Structures are given as C-alpha cells and as structure tokens.
Amino acid sequence: MDNWFKSKWFVRFVSLAFAVILYIFVGTTVNSPQSDASNSGRNSETQTLDDVPVEIRMDNENYVVSGIPDYVTVSLEGAPNYLRPIVLQRNFDVYVDLEGLEEGEHTVEIEHNVSNQLKVYIEPKTIDIYIEERASEQFSVSVDFINQDKLPGGFEIGNYDINPSEVTVTSSRSVIDRIGVVKVFVDVAGLDESIRNKEVPVNVYDSQGNELDANVTPEKVEVSAEINNPSKTVDVEVQATGELPDDYSLLSMTANVEEVEVFATSDILAGITSVSTEPIDLSQITETGVMEVGLSLPEGVNVPEVETIEVSLEIELTHTIEDIPIEVEGLADGQTVTFIQPEEETMDVTIVGNEAEVGDITPDDIRLYVNGANLEAGRHSLPVEIEMENQSEDISISTEIEEVTIDIE
Image 1 (cartoon, one colour):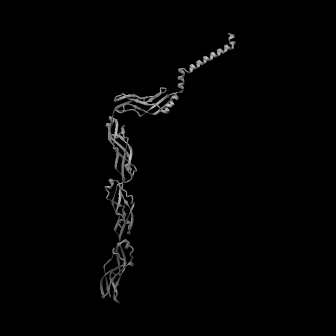
Image 2 (tube, one colour):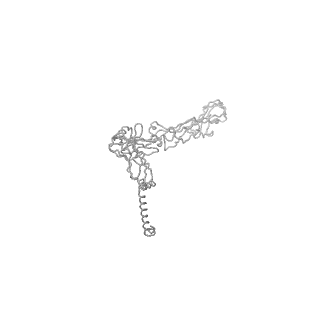
Image 3 (spheres, helix red, strand yellow):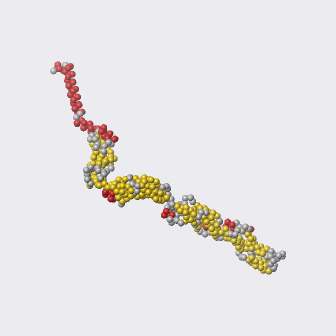
C-alpha cells in the first residue's frame, strides 16, 4: 500500500474521486426542498393595499345586492420578484361571485385571482349580503336653491326649468318604495345674472331626508333659472321733524324729483307705495334754500341711481322793524303837527314774506307817511301810508296801528 501512495497516478485518481463526491453533495444540498424553503423564507416580502375595489359577479339585470364594501384591504406575501410587479401593476381582481344565488341573505367569501406564487390575505374575508329584485321607476326632479339669503339685495329667483324634469331611479324594490324626493341643489350665493343650463347631480332621499343608494339615469340634469331684480316707480315724500324758530314759518318743502324707481324682492315691493327722505330738522332752518337729503329706505329696498335728492325749502319770515319815522305830507306853510297817537312820531312795521326777500329789508327801504294836505287846524285821524322799494306781491307789510291822530296848529 505504501507503494500506492508513492504512485502519482493513484494520488490523482483519489483526488478526482473526492472532487466528484463533493460536487454531487453540494448540488444535492442546493436543489433540495429544504434549501428552497430556507431561501424563500429569507427573501419573503409583504405589501398591503388598502383600496382594492370589489367586483360583483351576478345577474345585474334582475337583481341588486347590498352589503358589499366598495373596497377591501389586501395583503400579499411572497418573493419580491413575484410580489412587486403584481403590486405595481395591480393585474388581479378581487370579487364576489353571486351567480346562482337566490334572493335573501347570504354569507359569501371575497375571492381573488392572484398568482398562487403569493399568499393572499383579504380583510374582510367573508361578508353578509342581501340579494333583492331589481326595480326601476320614474320620478319628477325638484330643485332646491340654496343660499337665497346671500343673493345681492333686491334679487330673487324667478321662473326656472329642469331638463329633463324626470329621471329613472333603479335599485332594489325596498329602496324604491322608500323614496320620498328626488332633487338637485343649486347654489345661488352672490348671483346677479340668470343661470343657463347648469349641470347638477341628482340626489335621492327618503321621507326623513336620508340619502338613498340608487342608480339614477341620467345622473345629472340641467337647471336654468331667472335671477330677477324687480322694481317699480313710487312717490317721494319729504319728511320733517321739529319746528322752525320763532318768527319763521314753512311756506313750501318740495323735492326736485317726485318719483324714484325702487328695487326689491316682489314680496317687499308689494307693500311699498312711496319712499320718504331722511327727516329734515326744521329747528335748524332759518333761511330759504336747497338741501341735499338722503332717502330713508325700508330694509331690502335699493334705489341704485339715487343717493340723495334736492329738497327746496321756502321759509316765511315775520320781520319787525322798529321806530320807523312817520312823515306828514302836504302841510300848509306855517302849520305844525303834534302827534297824539302815537306820541313818538315813529311806528313799528311788520313785514311778512319769503325769508330770501324779507331778510334783507332795512329801515332805509321803508317810508311811512300821512297826507295832511288841505287840513285845517285841529285834531285829525289820518291813515298811515307805506312805501317800500321793490316791494314784491308776495310780501305783506303792516303797521302796528292803521291810523295816527295828530293836532295841526
């Protein structure tokens, strides 16, 4: 045997044999099921999808089903080279198969067609459903205009139209029987122009106002509505408060416009026959003139083109000028006069008329006299005559007494 180990061919043969045995052993270990499981465990990955839609497989023409969630949570576990493309592409379905099931309650399992290379966990896995006969009926559509209180002042909803005015509602017979109203909502906040063919979704409610799950055909309708700003023409009344100061009286108070166009909703307009100005405080008025006065409008009423109006006030003034001298005309040479009544040879004069004319009259504008021509000596009662420059017909002037008594010597 020592000679064998000394032979290089023997050594080469043993080395080759050991190499073949080692190769066979390693190959068998790598390809064994136990090695695959160990490898797979080390490379396994899990991903969860929260919004996977649930498909319903059933006779949709004759039946409807309730109790099926729109989405489920799906967790996938497996080797990344299988898992990641499926998660990325979502090329699988999650569904419930209701074919062949009759009306009534059922507990069914949510199924999938994910590759068997992956483990699949669905939450929930089973669900309770209810299958009912499908029913369809036509319903008239009503419209609810919301935020009407936020329309501009004076604007309101006028005539409106819904196209189509009826829709077909499809659901289970029990849902159809519960329908109380089918309506659309149109927000009119801030609108000052009419609505033209606005598309709005149709909603279905029971008699308690709870929204019902049903298919509506068509899902949307078109709404057109007039947004009106009604108006009418009414009289303007000038309002005043307080009293004029002493010696003043009001001759006239007129606005420069007799009518204005007021804008408001129809119900407000129905109760309006006139509008008034802001009250004018007469206690502050002492002269004839023109004032700018605002309008006192009821709530909800507008007069867009008129902020103020002009009011003309004509004030009558009672003006007394004291101690106007009384002249005696026509006395003969040598005649003298003594005043008996009044003793002072003067008299107060009262002038009444438009303040604009009366207010500027001075004592120099007035002359008082009596005619003593051709009178004999003795006591005489003579009427007082009055002269005033540029006296208007609208001005009245009077003395405190109409006659004077004099002695002529």
